[in-house]
Length: 620
Image 1 (cartoon, one colour):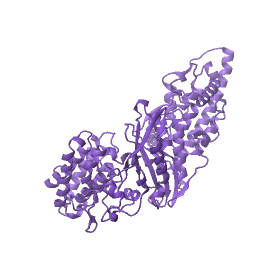
Image 2 (tube, one colour):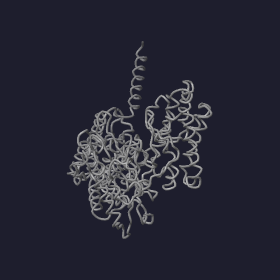
Image 3 (spheres, one colour):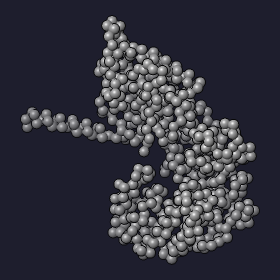
Image 4 (cartoon, one colour):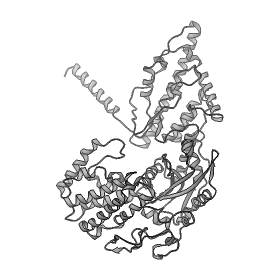
């Protein structure tokens, strides 16, 4: 082989190595992620030192020649593009390419005499920023606030932020920056935890959270009465331990701005041993707000809890009633279940429970204790509806799919039919818009399906001509009923028709799938018609918003020790940072690419240029 062919092979190998390095989309471990951040900070340090030395050299030359050279850093094309290509957004889903081209050195750019006043102007801007924090805030984001927001939203470890702050403080414009990350993001020095119910509890407070939510709403849309929706559930931290959170969350139900906020957080090795201890501070504060109301911007606002969103185990836990597997476990009617391997509820009509009968213990076999929630002004039956996420998606729909995929004959589909159904679901994926949280997957992943994957939006399309005709028509009845219950208009106008459809579906399921199919979830479909009349369409009392919020507890953890303190600190840091003159929607995350243009470019106008305003992007 001649030398030219060898050179060509070497060149191709180098190109392929470059392609492979550019395709490295994310760090493969948390250690690798910290190392990449540390490398980037070291590159910044080298780059800033070289830039400062070069600026001093150019100033010395300009003092002699009095010449003015155009500054390409303020042009539209090269500088910002090069800078942005050198920094990642430090996001878990973004690219971390350590093999990219190195940072440009100062010698690659020509500078003007305007750069001689760069450090002075940066120091002047930093002083103006501090005065903005203490005085009237404007719409701009100060440099210190922007760094704090980046550190909090990107979940940067404190050691990396400390190292970055030490670099800033080496320069005159960075002398006012704090020395540690804890001072920058205003971490709590001591967290007052309360020992209760076999674990530890921290109470954020209802009123304290409301005063952070209300400023995000236009004053003319703030209602005269806050109607609060409350939810609680268990959140396991890992599969290898029993450690779990029990958050107490809420949202304002009578406004369009449906933002979930946390009221209290409990942590232990099992669920709380006593629900009354767990809810004690919440009940005390709710009583005070209900009796006295509160004032907001000169307007007196009443307070009321109108709805509790819980799954069946959590609902029986906080109400001190029999669980869903008990003979008297139905929270809405008095029928007694029958045991056929598990508890079944075969009656379609039964006497309904009332708030009066609940408080008077008319049916003593339904109760296991006394709940302190009874001291609040709430209906102990109607204010605790079924959760559509757990009843419909994770309950009835998953139960039907188990019958079709792994149940006994004759309801089980043949392997060829299951394969055809799986192929349809995979082919449907490319037609699903990005607004859907999850895309359809193969039936091979059925044991790992999440609740949104059991949603009924695509089921009639993929099941047609695969399910037997009777089973398919039975499923269509269920599908139409759920569709009508999800409509703002038809859940009221066609309510009687909805009740008829649900009753027909339950009776037909009894004939098709047998007695063992009519479990707690299937029987509770008969109570949904009355619940949508009280609360509106299904999404009004669904747990999807709350379940989505719970993921923050796992994401902010950095170690396995003192997990409750970590979550409390991260939540307070996020609240302080976002509300300190920065009020963006929760899904808008800052980028780090603003920093280098901020340092390198100079400005001479009274208002900061575009790159001094925090750049944001919507995360999909």
